[in-house]
Amino acid sequence: MMIDTPCARSQCPEMPKVSLDQAVVDLMESIALQETRSATFLCAESRKMQKAMDLDGLDLCKLLEVCPDCVPLVSDVSSNFLSRTIDFRRHALVFAGAQKNFGPAGLTVVIVRKDLLGLAGETCPTMLNYQVHSEAGSMYNTPPTFAIWVANLVCKWLVSEGGVEVMDERARLRSKLIYNAIDSSDGFYINTITPSTRSRMNVVFNLREEALTELFVKEAADAKLVNLKGHRLVGGLRASLYNALPVRAAEVLADFMVDFAKRHG
Image (tube, rainbow, N blue to C red; front, side):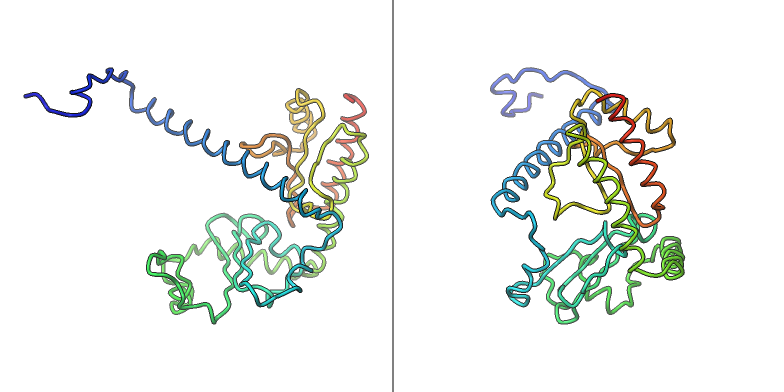
């Protein structure tokens, strides 16, 4: 029996046969390519916005003082949660993935203003309707008990170390060490982010000679400094300086960076 389809009528060329494994690989590569294009576009647009606003020396928190109640402020604080003091009274909603400073992946912290509960639209998924979670005591679904237990241990450790204020000071010390190594390298290391908006948790940078990146990662690993490769979509290098990292570890990395620049600069 002949099936009348657009391809049958127009005599579309026969598609090559591929295995299921190859089809999955092709699909994943296509998705990765789209993500790369999106990341490149977002990076370019953010740089344009940064230049347009001339953020150097501007305290972004002061922007909220212009009209703090005009627009509800929603913040993703995944990276700096528990690393600095945050005035939650300024926020309508705050959320944070625990996997940075609070515990293992699989746990999310949400702090939402009570007057916003019950305003979810009809198309809002149940798991993102915070009124549902509030009414169920945060146990609408089976809670990730292990992640919660570890988060409790982290909180106890944080209090024993002196609290958020101590974490804040350590974050400043760690990030200052790495940024000083970058800024004093005479262009060997490159960080294009405006100083006033630099992250204290994730320091990203590139080498002036990109060909040295793999060597940097290898020699760093030999010195027991690991996981310094940048995000898979943007490349470069990234030093994660979360709460659990001792200041001494940042000192060792900074010393390595200075030495590497002297030997290869």
